[in-house]
Image 1 (cartoon, rainbow, N blue to C red):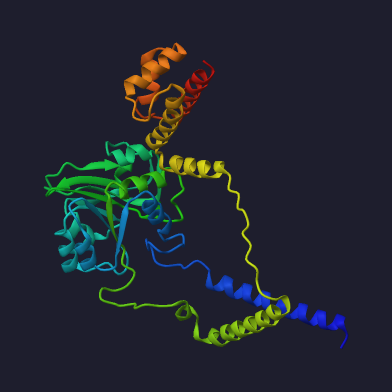
Image 2: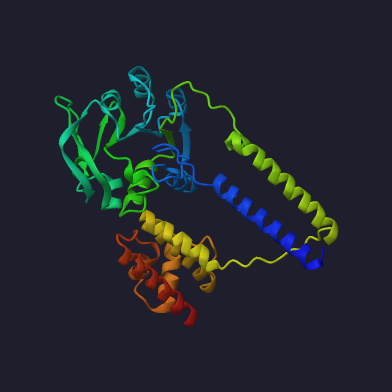
Length: 371
């Protein structure tokens, strides 16, 4: 056999192995569909994106598979999210959950869940798609326009005696009773991966679920008491694929040994990795914009500006606000009230005001640097 034929044979074998491994990897790493409001599902109906954002924002998200777990995790300062699924507990178990401390957020509840956990609310006859909040709930006001898709609405039950606040034409209602705040939303769509980026859905979802430092996420994906046990990556492979996987592993190992002996031992080499600082800044800016967190963005801009201004003015890091304002005003000749409002004023109320604040801070730094 000639050298060319040997080369063609090995190249063909390598191509077949690479294609087989690529197909197998794509199949094993495909998104897991999961159920509706499953906090680990990456499908359009899942809620992994929201749970990830909450944890990155510092919210302690506790996933509860049973009512007992949800009740054990509840605290007076916590929020329990109850999302309706085919496996939601029966009336007796829901009565136990109603006795747990903390506030409640009911997502798309059926009549049994609503009567057990929010008896002051009943379904109305109208439907809505979302839109403007038109209410005094801060979480909805900050989010603005939200899209739910076609969904039902709620109203106060007869003789409930509660002061019911209605948002988005009744798709979201809130009231206080027995020392807790109960919020009911008629659609889970704005919380899911598929609709989280529509309009102000991300802001509304983060505002509602992130109001408390601790969130208990109860969206059961199996019957109460069913034990899934621990599983490994091999348990996720169908039985008929086992022999294929093991043969591929054996082939890869043999090729690695064969090539390794010809190439010699591996030599470790440190390679530099360059990451632009602008990528981090742009990513943080997108996150602030998605959440409409103008207050945090303004705090970050002002804090960075003050850290750069203090050394240029000959002041220490612990200088008082009034001292910084007077020093900047004397250096630049600007009005002290204007300087104080720019450096320590309230949070901007709109994106345009946030942009004006950024320009004003940049002007102050430039004037101090050139004075």
